[in-house]
Length: 438
Ligand SMILES: Cc1cc2nc3c(=O)[nH]c(=O)nc-3n(C[C@H](O)[C@H](O)[C@H](O)COP(=O)(O)OP(=O)(O)OC[C@H]3O[C@@H](n4cnc5c(N)ncnc54)[C@H](O)[C@@H]3O)c2cc1C
Image 1 (cartoon, helix red, strand yellow):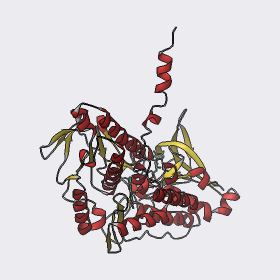
Image 2 (image 1 turned 90 degrees about the vertical axis):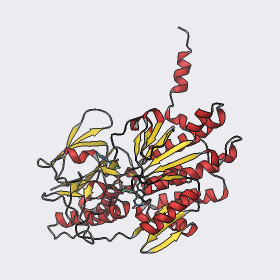
Image 3 (image 1 turned 180 degrees about the vertical axis):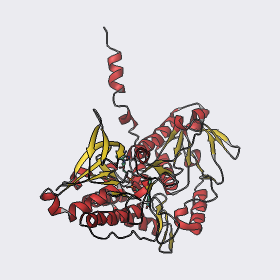
Image 4 (image 1 turned 60 degrees about the vertical axis):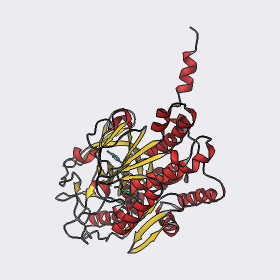
């Protein structure tokens, strides 16, 4: 009998689970005893730790994604979203990119839809706020920063210039700090091509509600990172919250107010919305309740892992695994093996991994790391950051492309062109149509 395994989400957990199942269930997939489907809005998996480098122009955005159909030839890929899961009936509702929603039945489901930005009801946030979780956001941000340098260079109005050159990042975890550090580095580098711009003209503000930055690398290296950022002229405002940003008028809880055209929101993540549209149990933070064996608590035929799941950390009783790639990749391996054990009626094993610390890039040749208690800063940390992520990026094909990008960057200056017009490709044509005589 064919066992249909449905994987909701083709990110870290989805891709790595499917890769392992594809390899280990080769015979079953061939003779029709098993089949695998991944549903994801995108046709590729995004290697998120490379988003800051892609935003800074050190990496081509195409090289930091793994195309699902190419990497998973034995898996059916459906593009669209799962909007509902009726696990009691073993049916998911699939909304394709175009056309009517339809039902997809399954025997085993893997909930791997990850997380979305955790936003707050702050006035104006939807006016100028942008997240930093997708390739689209990273590249739009890159285009925006470069475009605003062009705006600042070309205006005579000091207010327009000041506003264009003020960039705010809210949230000082690795997404926020890396995004800010890489973009600041790129903007600084780019000023050499402008007549009326110097690095000192550009204002970068990092707003953090707690009293520390980059908790992922521990308190000591976090303090070092803070000093580094401040030495670079970045205003880091700790114990400060964004109160409002209506129309770009930014108001912070420390009383400061200023105008900014760009605000990047990286203040944490929450489970993907599909978690709320299932009959699966949720924990107190809205994540799908997982067991240590990565099954959904209290159910049969359902597995989960990654950012969408509340996975107990057996190395730290009473705590949950943090939402990061370090856990997601390792969980996917155990999850895939547990599905195979489950199908064969064998005993499942628990996921066990002690967090080993983190590495972060802070711009070209700058980084910070705290891994297995080894603390590095500056160039060695940056080198470690690159080699570690290179070893982790999926497929040899992508690894080679990433190395080629980095090697080219050694010999040529980085590209500092804003291709923002790709976001409005029809504007020129529409303007031409508007000139038509009737
Ligand atoms: C900028 C940035 C830098 C990071 N750097 C690091 C780092 O250095 N180290 C580290 O350990 N971690 C890092 N992380 C965190 C890491 O990327 C995540 O923890 C990891 O991606 C989680 O994997 P996941 O499979 O749970 O989710 P994802 O990889 O986000 O995959 C979820 C997938 O589900 C899809 N999806 C969502 N909703 C639906 C739906 N309704 N139906 C179908 N599909 C859906 C999404 O399109 C996505 O493809 C970083 C994150 C960011 C944003």
